[in-house]
Length: 617
Image (cartoon, rainbow, N blue to C red; front, side):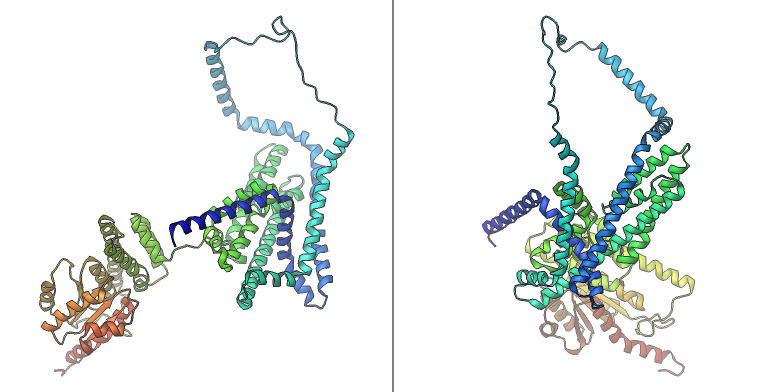
């Protein structure tokens, strides 16, 4: 794509985003109730489906579901209003106690602040005046005193102030009620229209996508509502037992405020903690109230949420916080309450709608790079420590040979390819290679420690199934790993040596600084039983072929295993180019190389075992 086309595409996307945000902000009076109605439809849709399975009919099932749902919501709202009305006249009674407690808790702080204020006042008195002081009004210089008096408020304004907000809330609630009813009644038709707009004719894929998205969103909303309701009920019961007044009110607020990510539960906790300080003469009630919220939050985050819908919502922490700020700016308190559900909906849509896949990248908590790219990127950025931490995390649940094959070998191949193309500077290339070598050496030391511990504990057993187990008293075959060309090949050979060495072989890795003649002489000096040639991109076949030809001239019967690491082409064609016949095996992964070495060394072990038996020749 040309730079001008890319710039035009980016500008068009930014303009589209700006238009969408402006529309969301300007039309919040309509869109906020609509968004709330959509989320309530997702929440109530499973209940409607359940009632329809009992042959209740679409419209009766929707009416029963919506009436019951809004009745529960209205009852909770009315209860909260009654509780607030009951609490308001008693607030002055708690004021003196709260002031006394705060005064006793902050006596030293108040004294320090008072001393600081006195010092600042004394310093300001000693400073020279900046300019002439303004003369008081009413003197000869200022004969007139002006006072602004507002006009009396009309009865119509008083009525509007009293009932305007209530009418607005009732109107929004009525709009939400009507929208929920029609969304649930016409949900099949709305789904078909959405498929027609988004699916572009692919009905099967779009239908499956929409069903999956609807199921996920409905499950999340229902689970979140259940967890928050349980949390609020536990708060209400706990505060009632502690003796905090209006425990039902705080339970309802805890249920609602917990929809606000991270800070919602603690906003709900602040009010009952302050009230407990006001009604008690000591610090027992406030301590119990704080402990109640801490325990409930720990249980909710570590027991209920992982049990009911997994570790998290799939949305990254930063995305949740930014979404809360964004939706609060757009739609105020309603946007704050709907921030997490709306973000989850956008994430699910981004997972299934190709045109909106960027939402999954921006909002999701899954890594955007696969492990091999993540480690390579960390090394490319010069962050050796984080690359090592990522490798250790992978090794906790993945075998070493698989990690080498799927992560480190591809990272090494990328570094070699980019360096040969000139995309990677010499210094950065050296750093990446040294970082990979250090990580491999650390794993080798760790393996050696484990082997020594097994030997000390007497728990190491022969691996009879693989044929490469430790054979006490029998000669160990020598496997020599040779780099085909450069240091990258040597690093890959080090990985292969670590995979093979614990299996009962004497393994040695040659240096890439050695010449081809020195490598060939080393084979004779070590009396190698098997030679493994390591070649990484680019041009691994050419480098391996040159070394194989030289080896064949000196040792025509030598068994060779040629590793064309991270190769994606046809290995049979590569073997034809390399040559060597049946004594040459070409592989693309360390796991395949390990298997070929096992097969090639089995005859040697069988011969050694036969000779070791009594009467053997």
